[in-house]
Length: 172
Length: 127
Image 1 (cartoon, rainbow over the protein chains, first blue to last red):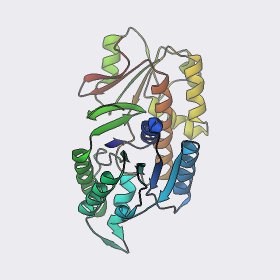
Image 2 (cartoon, chains in turn cyan, blue):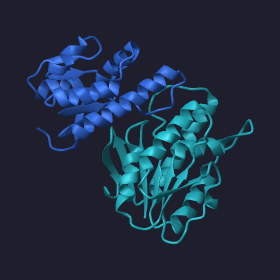
Image 3 (spheres, helix red, strand yellow):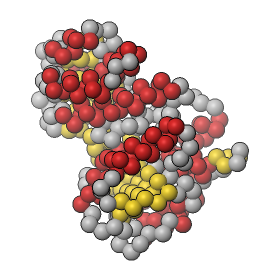
Image 4 (cartoon, chains in turn yellow, cyan):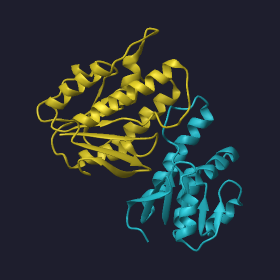
């Protein structure tokens, strides 16, 4: 099974994603994609760690090449967050590439192995502001990835201030 | 508590006026103490900005509000979408609005999201 959780920033996506796996009794892997650089990233990582504590997740940090994540038999995976993964794959060593296809293929690999693959992503395209080219390209590519994810997913849920809104499949 | 949310200028205030007989206190300009006895508070996302500018903790304020004024109707914009803002104070504001909104939505019996003037009940039942 595959579930995608989307929504804006700080709208309860993570808590909801973790709650989905509360009822899962096998092993749980938390695939963290945020690069641990900068004060705010570190604070966010620490906050998420605290929230996850005691919920039975094993954490694996993977900033790129998610297809390499080793998933033990019968494990569920919570991957957070696609917005970071997309940026990490897209902007490397001062150059820019389109990682949509690579990422979606990676997700296919994880989906085939995981009992339940839960992916947290972000709505980055709805503030209506025109940014410089790199950012516009990022918005476009993440939009493309999100559409691809939604197509592959059994369930797609948008979080609005913590309230789940069903977009596809069923609420879990 | 009842929460009315959605993007800017989608008809949130008009929805409240059409459904509820209540006076709306404007979070952008009101006396901060008046919020605790208000029937309805509008622009709660801007109230959060005011609290941050004063050095107050919007989360503690929101938790107190939920305790002391549980019948309140809260109108607040959804502001969490889009690219992470460049300015640090905008990032903090966005984060604090998100957290405050989650607290309000959690305690609310009903959450309504308005888009193009059309209400969708996303939690509970329409009153």
